[in-house]
Amino acid sequence: MKLDLIILLTSFALISVPPPRVSAATEGIRAATGSGRDTIIRGGYTLYFINDDPSFDPVTRQRMIDAFFTVYPEEAKRFNPKTLKAVTFVIDPGYHGVAETGGGVSRYNPKWLKDHPEDIDVVTHEVMHIVQDYRFDNEPGWITEGIADYVRYTYGVNNAKAAWSLPDYRPVQSYTNAYRVTARFLLWIEKNKTPRIVDTLDAAMRNGSYAPKLWVTLTGSTVDELWKQYGATPGLTLTYK
Image (cartoon, rainbow, N blue to C red):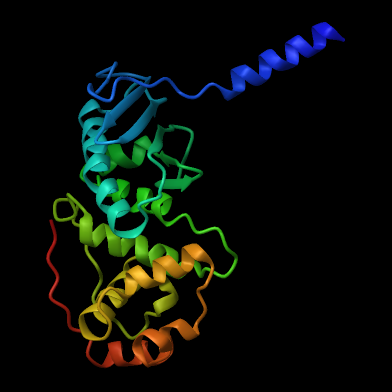
């Protein structure tokens, strides 16, 4: 009985140990190439970078790190100052999508980044999901992804070289298409109707107060009416970094 208790307590202690940290005064990057688990700290934020692909390009790795420390503090400052201070990136050769994020962990497909080395702002999109931290059942997915691509457009560091852009309006589109289609719609609303509406939508999605009537409260029109107005005059001047 006593031995079993010691084993149980020991196992719990091992599980509870947090990832190793380095001094906040020094950025620690232990491995320039190959697989590794590295801790990088800058400006009060910590990035745990786990690379499970020995062939992953160290240049791409560094660009992802730099992008994180450029955009994540900006996203946090504007949308959610209480967001996580420590984030994990995993380069996972067993993952076959582009990227996914959950629980403070962003997982990336190294093949996608090898084939699209300029798509560094996939980081900008993915870490916005950490900032969003939507936990309620009333949050439409098209708003979630639309805001994340709105943020990629607004704060992205390499969209131009990646040939990433927001698509022109077409009648076959819908605001529920999400991602870039919804992002452009949100930009149009901000420029023509309600500045900073994205901030209000984001907060409502996070605190569980979002409801379709919020569009009427913020703009005087339903989202369907806004989409119709957008389709009539969809022009936008867009610039990309």
